[in-house]
Image (cartoon, rainbow, N blue to C red; front, side, top):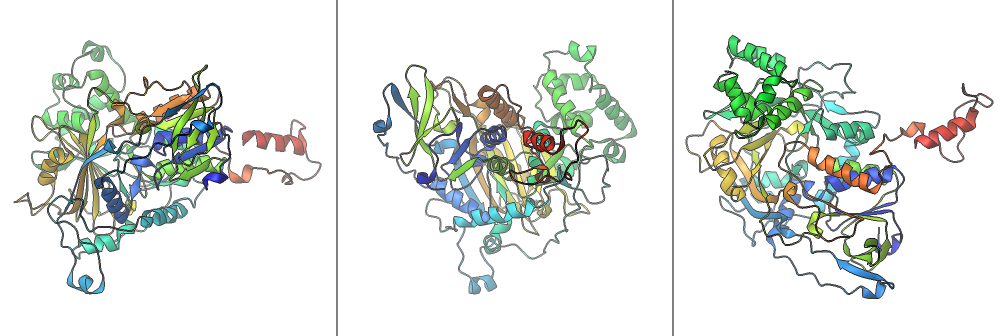
Length: 610
């Protein structure tokens, strides 16, 4: 929508389409608020986005270019008496830093070299600003449109989950879709030219997270009926890296008793411990404030079980207090069995689908969306210190009652450096733990490789997640930053995969292409103290945890500040239940309800549900 077509008054204006902002937009629109949702970018989801391979190359190039200084416009002529302007900051390009790209596969084979003119990668060294890779920026948008048409087809499903091969579906669970047709991997050597040619079939997330089956995001998707816009796949394995090898972690009852890694005594100890930790006991209280690892050691579980429980089930560090360790263990265990043998789900086509699903819900209930559109400044009433309007980058004044903004637009200079996350995305030619099935989705925990290194979480995605092409796997690595992303994660990549820097690893899958970068950890961003009006609310970015609890809790708190009397994301009505003005209801003429309301009563009830 062009700027001149925008209405001049809204209840809520939101700047940024990350997950928290998108959830707030959907929640406000659902209860009847007029919502304008803007983003300066050309794509949805901000740093939560998913890109095709070609789109990711464009994104990399964008962050490697020198940012152009933005000219500050003087909009004081749009002010009335008693008003003042509060200018927003330029978007913080430092949210992404230390980008390094490596390509370890051949550039192109002879046949492709003769038939196509493709960009050349920088082999075995970081890509610099003079790279030849300049893919079309429109490829990602076209693929996004195609994806949305595919996943939005089955609108009557509550939560569609593609079951694991060989897993029986439980009729008591929410509706599960039939398995996706399996994709046969190719044995042909994957070249860089092939990656570019098939680039639209990749969906590469900037952020790496999973959805706990009983987490706040899944509960919200089901409650709001937003789940009908997407489809999900079970994470099939929990793995860990130990003693130089990748091992499968037994976490469900079936896994424990089928495991060959544990003795009969260890199996009994593990099941007894998992059962006992679900409820708070006096023994737990006696360890209050002490490390969770100390509690595990005193249970005499042995090194094997301690490793599994600490790193792969609770997913905490050795100095984590027992309260946090037990809470994480319980969260893991409560999510087991709802949709599969692990606690986790992953959305087909990548995590970038989730913010777009909430944006779609907002649009269905009347929200207006504009990409490549931003807000320059706020119009503030001097007497009340409330935001009365915003002025967009095209000079239009838009009145609003509330304004929600991504933190990069209001970031003040902090004395302490920002906390960062280290990220790596790999395209590999095989799984870190080969099995009979080539369609495994794996969650891997990697303890620190040395004293100063952090714990690394790895998510390995197969082609049936619709994130990579047959014959490849997409691998995401994430950790708290101790240095640059390359310094933090390259040692892990070298140990787990075959690269030119990892001799004697011929039995490991080879890395074809990879990118390292750092992202700002949003959980360390101050949401208060920016000197902003009382009706302006700041959303921070992603956090370091594996789940989505931080983002959903943040969105709900902002919604409650805006509309404290309203329900947060109430269920949307099914399309067939909606009765439009002037439409005859399905009830035969003269027939009445039990309460005697008749046709008018049914119509009123249906409209109330909307």
